[in-house]
Image 1 (cartoon, one colour):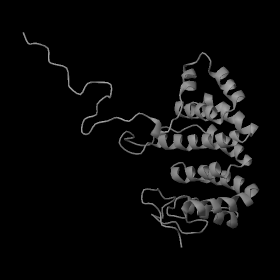
Image 2 (tube, one colour; image 1 turned 30 degrees about the vertical axis):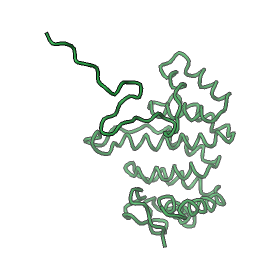
Image 3 (spheres, rainbow, N blue to C red; image 1 turned 180 degrees about the vertical axis):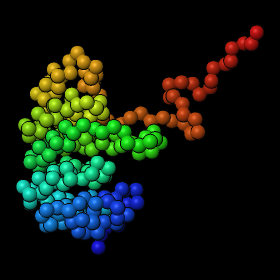
Image 4 (cartoon, one colour; image 1 turned 135 degrees about the horizontal axis):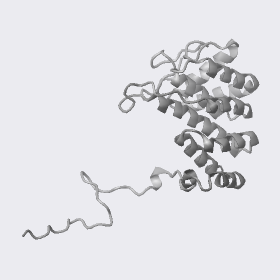
Length: 241
């Protein structure tokens, strides 16, 4: 029986709030190897689940995928290419699986994801609805995170591909790549980024760091927010003439 999902978690595919096991039920399409498809579907199901055992179940699904990684990773890449453009969530789900698998064979698949041009905006009102460009950017920044994990483990191919993303056509992807490289702690790779960006507008990205929200000074006050450094009493009004 599937683990109950958190209602705030988007589902993979058209099946509503519950994913039923089976190669074609998750919206990920049909895999040529039904056994691999079943494993991927189970992993997608547990990835979207919530509950006390959700994370443990997901890690078990990933372990089963890792046991067949030589078959699974290429299958995920083939399936990504077979999905239609508008299947944003399904495409993201496949990239997220590659991210969590942390397998070196994923680098060529991630390269294919990142080199595909982002299509023009399809939404009539992206400011107040779903932006298709935003969906595409999320998929690519997830691919950057996948490369960052591999690069942190010392994968040279992942490092090279990650470095190339600091010149990506989309600023958000470039920023994600620079931040990811900085957070790997790889001094040589960071130096290469600094050299790559020296003298460009993006050089400022080297100074951006992600911080834990708990470490950010919080605003104080109830209905009205005030600065701790200022007096509670507003200054007197200037005399009227």
